[in-house]
Length: 86
Image (cartoon, rainbow, N blue to C red; front, side, top):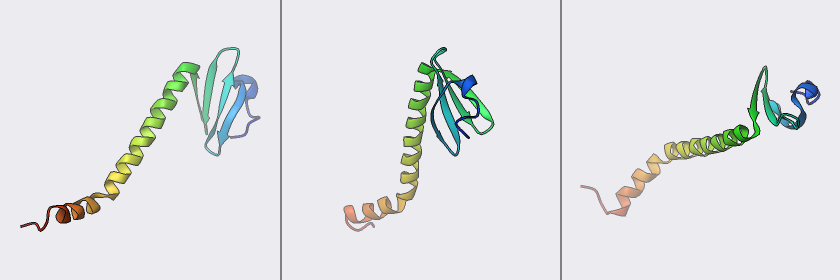
């Protein structure tokens, strides 16, 4: 998404990537998150809450992925930690 697309409607461009852009309107205090053909508008405090949720969700995704990658290591360690299994 290009920075100059709709700055008059959305406010000041803050950040962007190939997936979207974030704008802030100082007059209204509204943060706009533009993702491809969809725009979501938030009050600044709601946007901050969203960022917190997204950060927590990303950390949980990483934790789940790591847990799925390690079961064979944990099972192998249990066999050796207590001696031979009968």
